[in-house]
Length: 318
Image 1 (cartoon, rainbow, N blue to C red):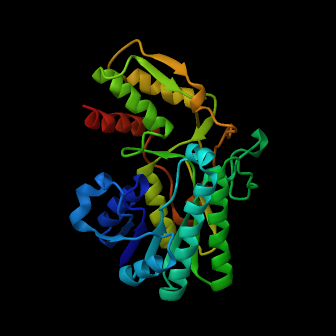
Image 2 (image 1 turned 45 degrees about the vertical axis):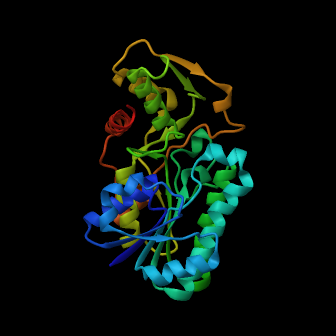
């Protein structure tokens, strides 16, 4: 079987490639010529890489012609909420145009391939306490340009399923973290700052944004296992939450990481530049549907995930 991973050099893409190789399938990855490849250097000789700009329709058709995939997981995206506030138009185009080009190429070249659309819990946006935990039936109230772009991707997948009968499954994964996570994301950013303090290359002050929000966190290695199961067993046209069912307050994550630090006396300082025009106060999901449909549930404790992120940065910061 041949599995195509767009955005294979990224955080989730590299972990999905690890999982797919462990399952014994052929892995093909699309990337842009300027993409950093450090996340896949350990598997570079076991995968096929295709340079592709998915913003160009002909390039997307060439990718599908070359890859000849049985399964496709579309992970190439602008995935940081913070960036979308500075570049809303670019975020929307970066997340919607490549997907429509890819779907058009799949429809024309390999219409029977299975396709996983990657949505986000950010699509749910503002949620009241009596609407928790969040199920797939919750209304979508996106509160950032990024979230709006993910709603568009999500509904585009549904439209192509209904219009053309393509085997498209949609996912809405809640926050997921682990080794290789970019340092613009909160848990990895905290971990890197702590390790830089441990190494003596930063003053013992950690800069933070809002610490009040609550998020449902899962290890990325559990999430990619869920993505695999959705491709394998998920019902075409359906959407599935992937989440732990527990919401961590951001300050709890910071407190845990500070307790794991190898130096005492680290000060916490809020910076206005790290605050957003609007933010989602709480996201806590319900993965009952995915558990019933494909047998998925998280296995890795988030405390272990946080320790693994710290160790990742300890290997990188010298």
